[in-house]
Image (tube, rainbow over all chains, first blue to last red; front, side, top):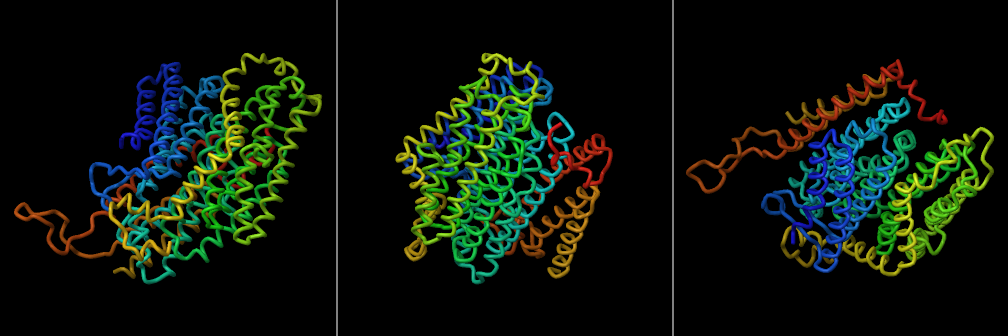
Length: 508
Length: 118
């Protein structure tokens, strides 16, 4: 059943196309978005089940054999990411039903949403590095428009920073791909993995690895390349920010996980130690930045950066356990961050502001909302039994095993700082009395009008709790995915369809 | 020839980065264009500059003759040019919007995103 690999791309493309046909019929566009993202989620789950039972799935597009044509490849990591894309897309589409302004819809909010999901899924599934560049661009152009849609001054200013830095990243990526092709004569990632091993000069390889590190580092908002993120992520409507927070930086993280396990795994002592150090700095800077902010979405934006650090830390340690913990953190972070941004939208709607100083009293008026804020907030800080706890426990364990005690210390300290940042939001927005200036009119907003917004929040919070309670099976899945990453011979054999010679796979 | 191209690519990268470091937003767009050209020429050069036949199998042959040009880098560059063209059009529209909204093309004026929400 190779259709399962193509469907995550065909569904959003078809939904986007249909939405464009019904340009003026917004009701149809809305339900197309819910239907499209919902079926994408189902297809993603089916793909994950199939990959888990039958191994890595490969489709050669147009029937061109592997190293020459473009292949779609789904290993466990890719299919996990496709499931998460469907999930966040579905949650955001539901949330958008009640929140997106008519003037945003009139300029194609829903088709753009689908095209963004198309680009994200394509990036997760492709097995060709130039094709990855193309999917990045599909994703970026959709995100550019979504970010600027509405045209408020802060949005336009945020958009120009986001657009410029992401285009520079794309040019770095393109340059790296060009040099890589010049050196190896191939673009297929499995083939690249084999040919780079035979390359005589390790220096050129490391230089290429650094080019990719910069390109993906900008996309993933890694220290010191994260400046575009806190300058832009707090400007668009909350549904868009939730989508970006959940998926876009994670595409950068995914690309790093893929490239630095499959292609650049020969000079681990240099490249992965560098990633480890940058990851630690990313975590600390993100958490400290969050503490310096006074507005919910800016705090959360900095915590995205800190979260990216956790995932890269797992890549930097480069053991099966640490990669499993990184993948688990990725799953947890996508769900939790998207949910927190969705909640920030509700907070804004009730209290009329994202500013902590100007909000308050939400616990008294909306105890259920407060509860559903606490679940992702505490999970992000790593409080058991929620999903963040298991992921951080895995990272700490991996750090103890490899002897990276500094990294372990950073994980623990940054978790504490995260808890502090979340506690500030809790205390200011939920716990303290409403401030004098707060408008009382908006506080009377009925619980019913929030229903459409609450459904995805409840859904994502339930998933956070479920990941925490079902820790063992989820960790098992992440471990299997990490195992596939640590043994690229399986991926290469699945793509190229040939048995590797024994000596090639033994040292991996 | 490779040397000339290498110097040209390096020069374009330097010019692009220098232009982007200026304070004017329009120069950022010009810098992006230069960087894009540099990347495309780099792919072109990295794939070896050789005079060969087009890679087309003759009608009476079963496989391609020896010594044909590699068509793939040109396909890559073509794709990259199309993408960068589309992105550039968007960037120019955005810059025009910035000028309308902010009333200036000075990057240092773009500080609303760092201020508290009004």
